[in-house]
Each structure stands twice: as C-alpha cells, then as structure tokens.
Image (cartoon, rainbow over all chains, first blue to last red; front, side, top):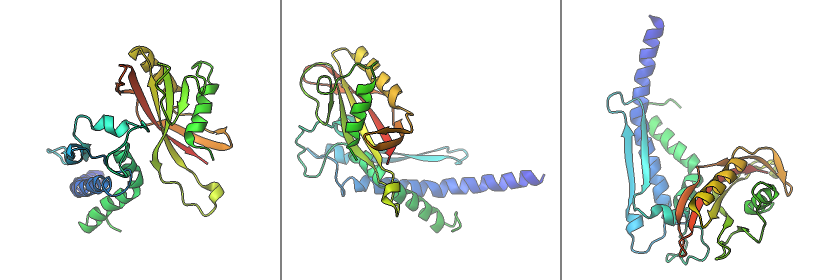
Amino acid sequence: MGIDNVMAGLNQKLVEYGISGTQGLRSAAYFILNDTERTSPTTPVDLGNLRASRFVSTISDIKTRKQSAVLFGFSANYAYFVHENMNPDVQWSKAGSGPKFLEASLKRNTFKALLIIRGKMSSSGKLKK
Amino acid sequence: MNAVSEDIKDMLEAESALALTAGTDLFIGKEPKSPDNTVTIFDTPSFPPDLNLDPTERYYRSAFQIRVRNKSYTVGMDLARNIMELLHGRASETWNSALYTVIQATGEPALLDRDSNDRPRIITNFNAQRR
C-alpha cells in the first residue's frame, strides 16, 4: 500500500511538472526563435514570409497531461531549403543572415533554454531549488 | 586545429570503399559546377566549446554538413548513406593532431533540392566532439 501512495504522489507531481514544464518549454522556444533575429546567422529576409512563419505549438496528452512537448520552427514550405543551403555563392539580402539560422540558435542557447525551463518550474513552485 | 571539414575530407579520402579523391570529386566549402558527381563538406554552426581552465583539455563540438550531388538520385542516396554509416559513431581517432572522441549524425540523408541542372543534392548533418 505504501508504494501505491508514493507512486500516486509521484504521478501527481509529474502531472504538475508537466503543466509548469509546458510553460517553460514554450518560453524557451520563444527565446530560441527570437534569437534568430538578434544573433548572426539571423533569419534571411526577402519578402519577410519566412520570418513571419515562425510558430510555437504545444503538444500534450490532454487526458493525463503527464507528457508535454513543444513544436516550433518555421512553417514556410521553403524553410528547409533556405536553412540548409550552405552555398557560399548565395548573396543573402539581409546582412548577417544566412543558413542554419535556427540550428545555430538552438546550439547557442541550449543551456539558456534549460535555465528558462528551470526558472519557470521554480517560480511556479513546482521545483525546489 | 584544422577546420573540421579538412579532417573529415581526409577521413573520407582514406576510405577506399568510397573511392573519393580530394579536388576531383571531394571538396570543402564550395560545391563546384562540375563534375556532376561530387561530395562537398561544409563547416556549420556548432555547440559552444568547453570553458575549461586548462585550454589543452578543452573540447570543441564542431559541426559539419556533407552534401552529395549525383546525376542519379538512387546512387547519390546510397553514397550519402554509406558516408553516414562510416562516420556515425566513429570514436577515439586522431586526425591531423585532433582527437575525435565521437562523431554523430544528427539525421539520415535527405534530399535538399535539385540544382539548376536537375542534379539531386542530398545532405546529411553531423556533430563532432574533438580536442
């Protein structure tokens, strides 16, 4: 019976962590996307459609809310081509922009993203420092 | 320490099964218009290096992309997969004085596009840890 109580409490905590973790994940995703506008290589701009196609979406199990994840990136159908085009002959129209803009931001900000998630969980009282 | 593309070029050239020759069908930094069938290695944005007090103990987490261009999609995809299988999981090897503790593909080969001459271009991205 004891283990059942412990598991029930742990599962409840996992549910709570999942909820607050989603907030942290979304904040981290926004931070990573915003940094593609601040730090080179930034998002290439022609007409602005690619930059405007940024999105953050939450995926979670609605029934149990024990697991959550965020899906984020650029939804323009040519985003992959721009992102992976390492051709040095391309004259990117915006100074400082170039390929791998999202990958670079992700790699640059991995630790910051973890701090953001941790901070959100701490501020909501779901994680003890 | 060399650019990671330089060391990877040497690794691929040393693989007799791939039969690649630098300057002929194996390039770094820029994909030439000819020949039709080429393998090009690009240095790409990477994770930050370690901040160890002792710089000799510092690990670098370099990243690179390998782009295969071939007149045949199937042949190009097979070559890209062979290269991925040869590099993915490679560990504890020294190339040009750099110790490569591990190389990892971040995905499987994928079609990037077809160039202006309708030749398919297939890319695979990798991360490496070295010092």
